[in-house]
Image 1 (cartoon, rainbow, N blue to C red):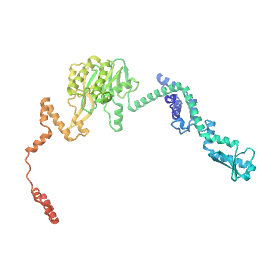
Image 2 (image 1 turned 60 degrees about the vertical axis):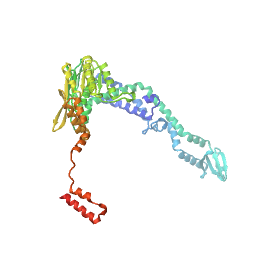
Image 3 (image 1 turned 180 degrees about the vertical axis):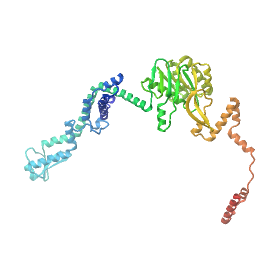
Image 4 (image 1 turned 30 degrees about the vertical axis):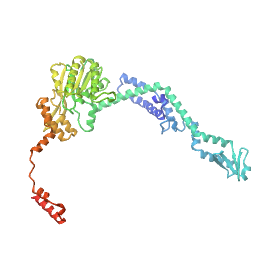
Length: 517
């Protein structure tokens, strides 16, 4: 509709409108079938907005051909039989040879001159040609044009009219098609208000049907949406991740999220354990509940969320001179300046883009501000395990962690959320999963163990003194070279240029025997 209104539409846009409006009648019949549960008032209003577009659909169906070009100026989009005049111009354009042959046969029969021909050249156009001996047999309607050696050329009013039609048939056919297209667009524009209502009704019914289908297939539940700040999700799931896992025949691990007196959850846990998924799934459940959808959970009770704020992921804005950390801080500032008690906030890894103590300080102060000033419901995921100490100071803060199991030196992610806090992030384990060289991950484990044993300053000094490159060099100096073997001694004494082929072969066998012994 927008393209047609701006004069940029084409025949395919008209066909799309025809197809969509034709479905409104089908949809009305389906919704009127006996036995269906009555639609709620909002959807009943949408059903009434579908309207009746039978006359327009019929006209477009009669007017448009089966195969349509992209642009009206390409022609060929009006169906045969829709416009008699257009069919005539097309017939002249496509069947000019047959029409000329038919006229020639007519003149030959009328005059009795079997050798009469209708020919064409670029100088005089179409003409009737007979031999000089047969010229006297032509009637008065034949007007003399040229005398040739042994032949006479004539013109008739009928032939002149046919020539004129043939010459402009293609151009006139295209011009008439464009005119008919403009008429069809004009008819559509006269009904644009009704079509817009039908489009809105189709969209609303489509969204409702799609959400209902997802609710049935995914065993979603109807949430309770109420005033206040309740947020109680039982066995919540992330619909997109769940669908992806189902395609791989894997099960999604559902989790509870209850923000009541403890309206802020500080979620710690390893990389790859599911913290980000947990944050996002609860935000998605809040959105689905407030648009009137069922939600992917076993039960849900949600107080109205006036605004939802999200700070997840890492991205920069180099065109504006903003680093990844700057973008993170700008988004965090927007949250702290706007969130209120009825808002829902999800924050993932605040402060990770700068120095450790800087980032920890920012995350610490942000968490305190959310608790004391914004007073929002919030999910705050972090690797700064030091933040868990705030639970003793902030009464509305609860520590939650992603559960893992260590088994035979490996880590198993359970993707379960439970009370408590993590003391490790298992980043080196994730690095192994990502494919870092074994030498890198082994050295990283050595560095981590050194850092965890002592004060940061002392540990760093020891690490610098014990760089693997210099350690290897010291080992090479301290280790005496091994004694020379008999094979090496013999190889040193050999003079290759003085050996004959036979001696060289014998030497190879001797060396092989010495190695075997």
